[in-house]
Amino acid sequence: MRHRWLVTTACLCVALGQGGVTLATVYDFSTGAGTQHFGYGISAALPMPPATNTVPSSPFFGASYTAIGFSDNLPLTTNVVEDPGNTLVPAMRFVFSVSEPRSSINRLDILWEGGAGEDGLQQVWLWNAVSGSYVLIGSQENVKMPFEGTV
Image 1: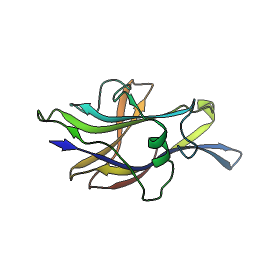
Image 2: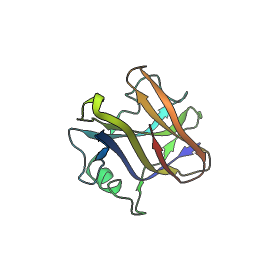
Image 3: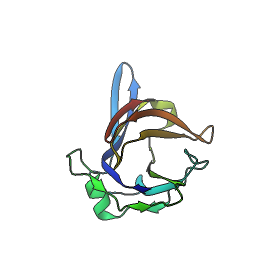
């Protein structure tokens, strides 16, 4: 099997509320990567989701961050992953370190645009640091999947 990812953008919006006013901080890749946000790819071994939050572990570099910095129909297109044993799945991992105190966060809004280069189930997982495992927050049968979710 051959796998290829097409990713347009990924971002996390942290909504804070106080006294009926909602403020938001957006974490995305419009300014590249930095101390609070990173991307990794491009495949992971089955089963999915992985048991740890360190898979996949190959870091993105400059051009990859430029490609996923904006929702502009100019996606990051990964190299093909050859998988003759059919034991790998296309996978990307985005890490956003949130600077707001946990007690002030009302919700997390997630945006991910992308998909695999072939038909199949696309899934978006969120790491739950309390439980130490991933939680499925969305899935869809599609080649390209824009996903917006709230946690």
